[in-house]
Image (spheres, one colour):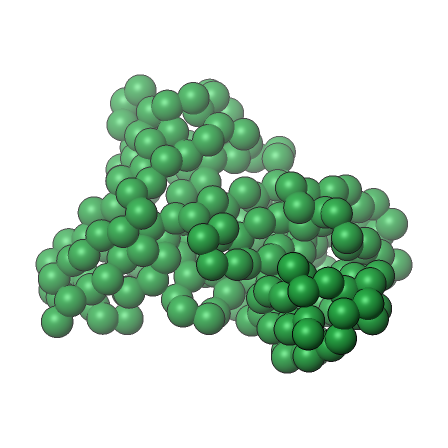
Length: 110
Length: 112
C-alpha cells in the first residue's frame, strides 16, 4: 500500500471551508484513497473514499488530482465539531490492512 | 454505526499479569482488527483477522496474541502485560464489499 504524507496540524475558521491535503505520490492504479477522522477519545469515523473521480457525500468532498499523486478533503463549512485528527489512507480494494499514520490535527477556531 | 462492543472499556492491571480484551460485533463482518493508539504514534495495527481462525500480524504484534473462534468475537491477549502496553486499544470490523472499516469506542488499558 502506498505511503501517504499529511501536514501535522492545520487551523480553520468556523464557517469557512477546511481543505486538508494528502500526498500519495507512489499510489498504484488500483489503490483507493480513504479518509477517516477521529474526534478526541473516540474511535475513528469513516468519511469518504475514492479511486480517481471526485466524490461528495453529506460529510465532505474528496478531490483527487488527475495524476492521483495527491488529494484534498474538503469540509465545506467547518464547525467546531469538526475539530479532530484526519487520516488519509491509500489501500487497494482487495487489501484490508488499514495503516493510519499520525494524520492531520484540524482545529476549527470560533 | 456498526454494532461493535469492546470490553472492558477501562482496565488497570499489574505488570506480568495476563489480560484479554474482547471485541464483539453484530454486523457479521468478515474482517476484524485490533489497533493501539499512543501519543506521537497514531493508530498502529496489532493483528487482524479475515475470518474464523484466520489471523495475521500487523505492524506491532510483539507481545500480543489473538483468537477468532466465532465470526462475532475477536480476542486480544497480552500474555504478560508490560508498562509499554499501556495504551488505548481500538477494535474495528469490515465487510468484504465496500472495504470500509468501522471502529469501536476503545478500551483504555493501564499497566502498573
